[in-house]
Image (cartoon, rainbow, N blue to C red; front, top):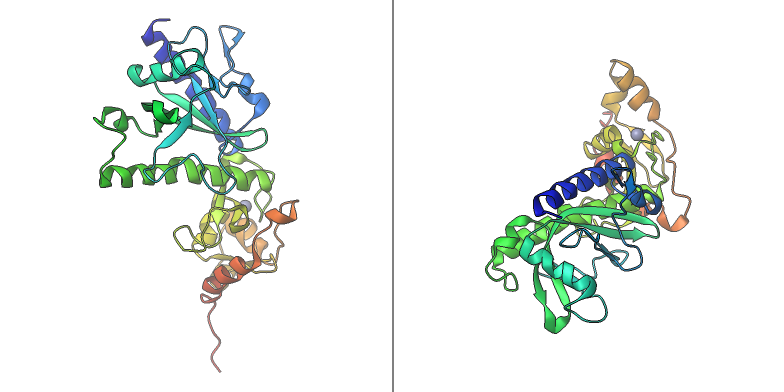
Length: 301
Ligand SMILES: [Zn+2]
């Protein structure tokens, strides 16, 4: 296949994957990924058994699968680049050949991160930027700018910081959203809205705080409006899983969004994940609730 044709086809595949994932809330389920059609023919965009998807007509790899540890990225190193192990066998032929080919063609790939059984978070475009034959692994970057580096194996401090920041935005935050949305069965914990594209994973203890880990027990699946209201302390959640609306908002008179969307949520109980181990940490909720509670006006005597 001519490389311009292949590049265009990749673009179409990525657009399709992106749309599907966004409709679900940032992830795809196993069977959906076999659903891409080209001229009436099925073109699988993932290879579940081998991990490396090399369509016969493509000059370089289309997608790779990685399975990170549950709460951290085992494949992520301190420089913010990913390491992807060679397939077993000859490093110069088979699946490894087309993955290495991606270094010279510069063609973008899709990384499918398997967060939970049968649930994949797509990250794209990613680029194969180098090869480490002595460790039998490839170096993968999350940004095209890394393909222009003279020596990707020795990043400067600013390059490293940039790579780590990218990893946080493009890998860790999407992975957190997937884990939380799946735990909450794609439903807002407050109002039960079930549209993945309108749902976020909210941190209970904020990201950046030492207790603010991107774990399911420090997360809540919330629709966009309830997420924003939570972050603004217009809405609080008690350690007993009850919703509180701020005093100021309860007093206000306005249209249906205020009335039904916010005021009527006051006193409601959260809709929790079925699995006990996925439910919000009460200590984290208590820590966060203090900052909400501080906004309630104190009555003077
Ligand atoms: Zn909601």
